[in-house]
Length: 115
Length: 226
Image (cartoon, rainbow over all chains, first blue to last red; front, top):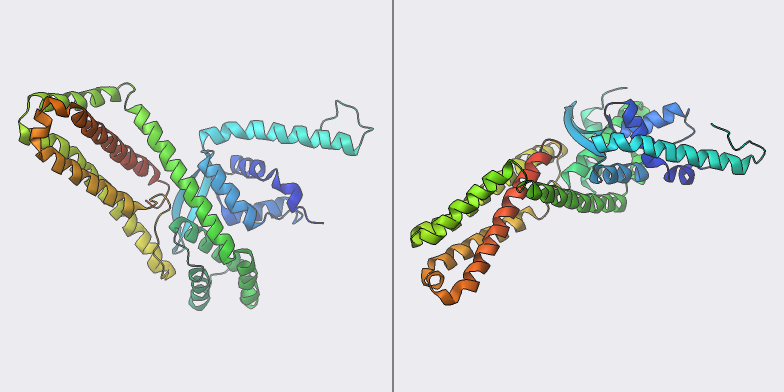
């Protein structure tokens, strides 16, 4: 089953969370980190990743840094102060959504259930 | 992880150049993605993996991404310009702003025609030079990338959209104001008050635009190809 549609809505949160844990990352590194963390179950497509990164940059949540690496130029992304503030709220928003989803999928669970 | 051979690198450059992209930022990002991915694959897998990348980064997708990026970059610069412009009226910068306009008004009220002309022209000429310098610096940075990627298209930073057009507009407007200011009799006549105010308002708007644009690009140059 393709996870792409399920991932779409949470891609920005995933990016922000990864950048909170790693000081700075470049596009390809993000795709590989997600693949590694989910044992290949979730693959972020390039078609979704780069537009999301550019949007977050334009919104002022990410800043970029250009570095020379092995005779080529690499663009690193890192969180801005606004971005750091957003991570917490985006994470609790996503966690709340997952909890509610869990209640729908497993109605026997008590309302106070936490993942 | 391995290093790509020169032949493989040339193949990657050729594939990316065929997309006819003009945004330096997008081009370097795609090139780095290709090379990073291909470096993690064996020599035998190179052709197949390059083909797979080409299926993902189609010309259409890259151009759409470039367009979105240019729009976002333009908005980012405008929003930076706006916040810089507002900062001209906050402490302590407001002192410099007030001093500039006081000196300007004093020259305007008590100066002779020559000093009035200079008061109008010097800030514009200086601003044009600053923006020209910015454009030249960006051109130099992007030239290196063009050479590296052997790109045959006109590359430019997405943060300097229509930079040449802006430069020409600023230059023409500066000249227009200069020519108008030479018709000094118009300014001396009381009937030309509205005309004088209009010219001064345009002057203030251009000076503000030039300096805030320069400052915004200077700020962004730390992280972008400008």
